Length: 168
Image (cartoon, rainbow, N blue to C red):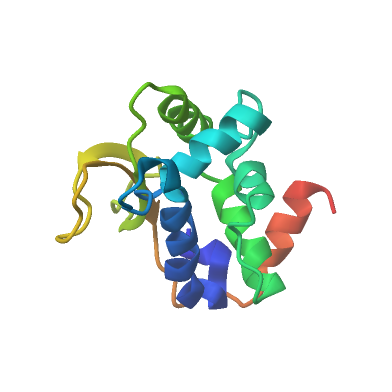
């Protein structure tokens, strides 16, 4: 997947951070009525706008929430292309939807993991637990496999391939 993002791969961590802030634990406050942001806010947005639903791509959901970055148009577009190429993105959208609809929604944590060598299909995986040593709550962890750019790959090839695939 690193081939898709190409020279913008140094921005992947920040793009994952955007997802993790939106889907992470809500801010702990004294008055429960003041608790907002994070997963609590996402539950409300889902109720009102049905962002995550069958037939909608992960790419579109992330884009409509403004989680594709804004500092670089190239990184923005390539991040969306990367998300669009996750073979089980429908499962990711469904897991998010089900979590937001549940009686006890859990914070979610998105992370990049190394792709297994020799695996032709890069599927996102799901686990539960505390994603960081300082996490207080259990999360649903979404692991997105990524591979480095091959050293002999020509520049800009991913951009041409993505444009051709989208028909632009």
